[in-house]
Image 1 (tube, rainbow, N blue to C red):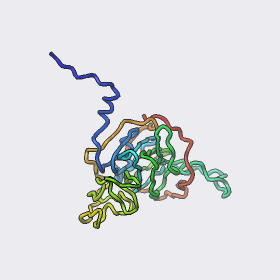
Image 2: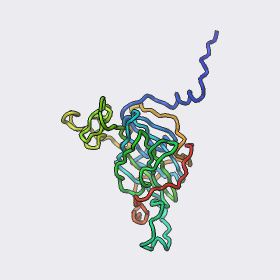
Image 3: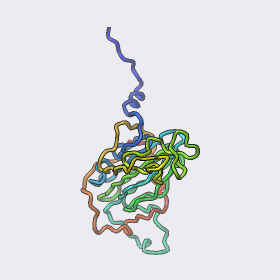
Image 4: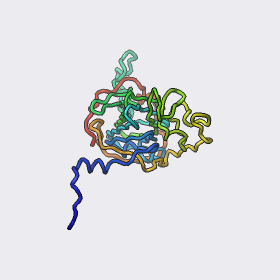
Length: 282
């Protein structure tokens, strides 16, 4: 007699296909995980898999990714190692823009590409500061909850996108089974003395050769073009929050345009972009 397996609901099948086992430190590429949620103790977060070799140049991209902390009650800290987000389209300067007394534009990155950070809940995400663009590495960002959202939007002609950031799950107060950082944060033990030397504490104490870390000598710095994923990451199903639409692709070798002027690109990190609609991820 033929034995048939039980018929599981389609939603459970999708969950099983999307999820992998949780782990410590691995990579995540925003455009490859567009519309998904990634959970881990720590992440090396890249704009795309060819980061530091080729720009991500697909126009009209609107791609969102949520990162969830390792455990309920944890928070997330994001610190960029490298940052480059802009478009080659020169902004159109209106007569009002020439007037020093005129108010600054509502969108400081217009008309070029930008990266916007959010914190949850996903149904009603809140922007974490202004849209990010230009060539300057942004200041570290910390969430107040366990979810960090990233939304990459490319606008105009010839967008140029490439960034690498370190994402760390941490908590404050009693560390319990977590590692106590010198600055008062607590991070998962799996991030201490990692072989890539990532500063997950933010003060270097998780990579120190003295107690309580007692790391055995300097750790090699990973190649940002390589893959640090140990194959044990966790990818969860999509949240209905940050939009994700438009063609995705990678091209154009890494080289900064000589005539590009950040002052003309509108890269001031002031103001909050609140007019962009949020919807389901495609």
